[in-house]
Length: 87
Image (cartoon, rainbow, N blue to C red; front, side, top):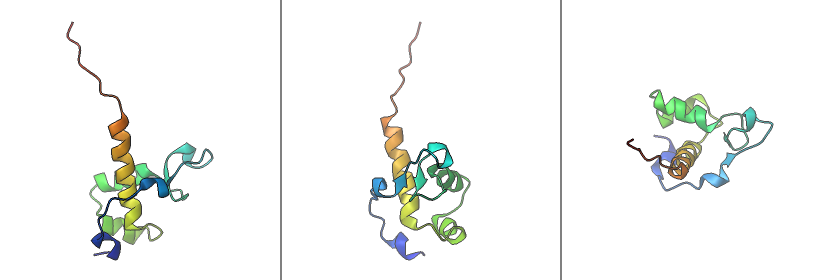
């Protein structure tokens, strides 16, 4: 197990996720790299483990993956809920 995975405390994504207009079309990226939050979420959704992602992308740390998840969760929480109307 990657040493960073042993400490599963909540990650403050605001210290890790960056958004730059000229990089990846302004999408949220990890620490100014060209790896986006979407990339990480897609890898996780396809079944890659955190350990495998860190192994294949050594510039990433487990904390970066947790930051991407935290960012996505916070963004989801902020999306307004649509109510169903019956006509």
